[in-house]
Image 1 (cartoon, rainbow, N blue to C red):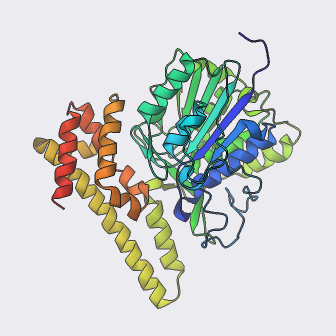
Image 2 (tube, rainbow, N blue to C red):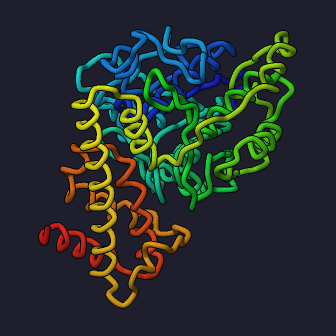
Image 3 (cartoon, rainbow, N blue to C red):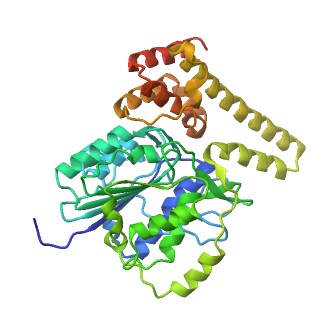
Length: 415
């Protein structure tokens, strides 16, 4: 093995687009500022975000993105390695494995990838919607099966010395719970494989949530910590105390949790510790809201603030449209479950079985995504993903993939 000092690579990805999902890209922008401040060179950082917030028509402060109430602008200087439709699961995996040829860029430009080797560390952070074995990107899904397969292949090819993954989404534990304990990979999820995750910090001026609960706590802890003296285990213990609406979980090789943050994230100094500690004492999470409720909450707040009768009526129609869409999705999932297991009643909707059939989950979810493709064009992924645990439950009860696919097709044709 080479004796040279390894490089620190960082991959940051927000999987959503649109103003309603503001928090995901704000999380990534803030995370970039943290690693940049810690001394990670830009050539070793890859940022993937749709980049439709800073100059969005709904942004009352053009050019500004914040991640906490009255917080600093975290947008200036953020890397624009992959934006728009180039933010995809396919590109994410290609970037991770250093596969420049596998990157598909719609508008051309540099295909920046992690050029890591056996001496290097890799830190990955992802933020968006998710469910059992599924993490959303704007145009496609990242599946647990593909993520785990890619990491295992990279380990076999000695493309890193150590890897750490932080993931924020609903059911994020299901994306990394199958990480091998025998490789140098450690993961932390914002929630268990069965839990939703909460948005926080609703902003009255922007009509959106500024952050996710887990990330708000994670970045606060980073800001008050000396990376050269704080381990990932220290951080995990603190996150378990701070995050109240979901359960952060550890996966993979937990021995790596004893590694100092500086091994992956640079050497943030401790000179500003007293001031940061004061901020930590006054830190308070507000407006904690389950991810799937965010669109409804935002719309209700818009209605409440609107004084023009016509605009208020239009907003009310929009709210009713969201309720109708959510009910339609839930009804469709019930119909699929009943078609597969008529005798099961509503059981598949309530059960939360562990997901072991990762490849089968991908096959079923992809068939559903293509069959109901118009849903993904009409509205945000959050409502759809919040019901997709039904597929995991059916699979873990022993139902074959072909049978579930047939049920999806049948229910679609009877609409």
